[in-house]
Image (cartoon, rainbow, N blue to C red; front, side, top):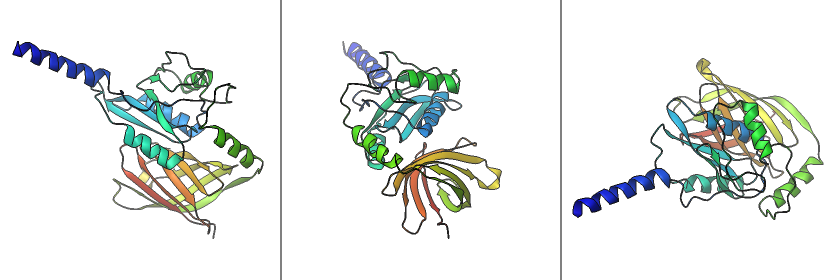
Amino acid sequence: MGLMKKILIILFLTLFCNSNSFAGVKIGKGEVVMSEGTVDWFIKYIRGKKNMKPMAFIMSANGEWSSYWYCPEGSCRAANFMPTIRKCEEESGTTCGLFARRYSIIWKNDFKPKKARIKSKWSDQEIKDKLKEWGFYGVPKSSTSNVEDTKPKITKKKKEETKTYEIKGERSIALSWEGYDELIAGTVKFDEKNYKGTLNLPLPNNDGNCSGSYSLQTNGKGTWQITCSNDMSAAGTLKWKKEGSVTGFGSDHNNKKVKFTVSSNS
C-alpha cells in the first residue's frame, strides 16, 4: 500500500510539472495592437534557438513592451512568470499578461478563435497575416467590448499624432551589456516620426549589428527593444533628458543587464 501511494504521488507531480506550468499565471485580455518591434520579437520567440524551444511570451496591454522565455527542448517545467509580468507593468505603465504559451496564443480578445496556434515553419508574412486576422496586428478591428486599459492610450495617441514631425540623424552612444568586458562605444543611427522610431547600432570587434525600435511619450519617457545579428537581444525603458541626451535601462532574454547613454545634439 505504501508503494502504491508513492507511485501515485510521483505520477501527480510529473503531470503537474509538465501540464500545469502556466496555472495561476495572469493571462492578457482585451483589444491590443502589437507594435512592429513586438511583432518582430514574437517571430523571434516562435523560431526558437538551437536546442531551446518557446515557453512563454509576455506583453503589455498597449502592445509596445514584450519579453519571452525559452526552455530546453523536451523539458519545459513549471516556471514563475509573475516577476517578468510585474516588470512589464512597471516599465510600460499599463497592465501586462501572458500572450502565448509555447506556440498557442492565449491572449483573450473578440476575434481570436478558441484554438489559435502559430507554426514555427510559417514565414514572417504568414505569421503577421494570422496576427492581423486575429486582431493583434495592423489596423485595429472595431469592437463593442469595454477595454479600460487601451482607451486612455488611444486618446493620448490621437493627441500626439496631430503634431506631425520627422527627425533623422546620428549620435554617439556608450552602452554596457553584462557579459561584455568593456564598454561598447559607437554611433547610433535613428529615424523618428511622430514619437516612434527605428535605430541601428554596430557592435565592436565585428560582433554583428543591432537594429530595433523605440516609442516615446510626450513626457520624454518610452520603451525600446533591439535584436542583434549574433543572437543577442534586449528591451527596456528610456528617458529623454532636458539637455537632449537619452538614458536607457533594460535586460536581454537571459536577464543580463543593459544600460546606455546617447549624447545630445551638441
